[in-house]
Length: 157
Image (cartoon, rainbow, N blue to C red; front, side, top):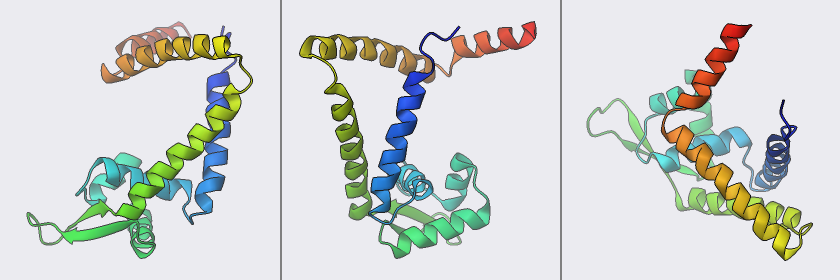
């Protein structure tokens, strides 16, 4: 039984809705932001690699790259290893957008934390960090415990 009622997920969904609304003020949608994020994390990536990471079809990736290039969020450079493909890089404008997204999320979380007393906030942050560290460790290990639990649960059905 989920005693959390999936409220972490529900809060994250509301943060994402607000963030998407604020990103639209910069003329960026969430799908475009995801595309930029992949390029920022993988400078010099090819469209083919982005398609694989984001599970996009060739046409959607090409349109998204062209739109983001026209808006000044990415640049293309010829791939020296393969003259037929191009490498994609984020521009300074894209890097500022990352900071903008982080600042919007920070604003939202600060708003939520105003409901706590200073002691409640300290306790909450300490407990949240425990959950974050556990989540990150499981992810870095490629989810062995959760996969086992999921598969065991599937076998019971």
